[in-house]
Amino acid sequence: MTQPTPPLTTISATYLAEQQKLHKSRRYGVASVMYAPLVSQLIKLSGVQSLADYGAGKRALKHKLDTMGHGAVRYHPYDPVFPEYGSPHPADLVCCIDVLEHIEPHLLDGVLDDLAGITKSYGLFSIHTGPAKKILSDGRNAHIIQEAPSWWLQRLTARFEILYLQPVRQGFWVLVAPRGSYESTVAALDLKKLAKASAAAFPIKQPKRRGILGRIEKWLQR
Image (cartoon, rainbow, N blue to C red; front, top):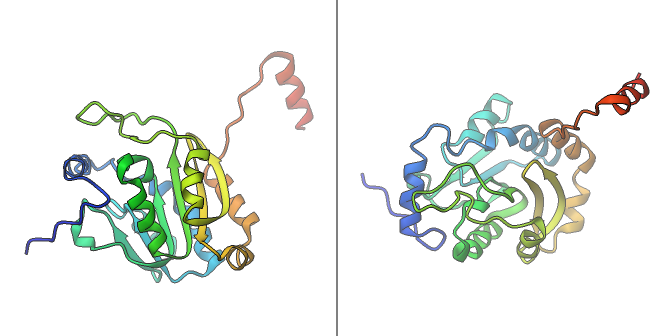
């Protein structure tokens, strides 16, 4: 049976074909696995019963979460490359991991509106702010949008409440909630535990000091 073609309001036909080629690689679209420990902690802290994975790729996040004991959480993948997943589905928690920097700039508002429309309680979005190693067939960098967090926040705050933002290597992740729900959603979470989970998943490596400064630092750490 032929699957229906997804509506092209959030991706152009040309770019969809490009993404279909990229997803033939087993290594493409698996960044969500790195965020699985953070998502796991968020599930435990919030008690969400459903999760929408926007830009799910090969559902790597689902496979990892299942191994972490979250098989009971209802999972709704969405990715235009995989039309069999269906349309974006509302969920308590919406994850959009390393996706937004790949969106065509003139269609970004449509994608953000999509996310706002399906986020019932929380949204966890990770965004790269610099270039990718991969180059598209037309010569563009695979990270089509390369903008600072302040640029992204202007667009996110137009649609969401910002509960927490954490810089990570080459970008940041942000926890959001529907507009008008800040007090109730932030009060229901232990953000300190979430921050610890983020620090464990994405440790910041400090440069080693050499010479006399390095010896002093080691002595102070005894």
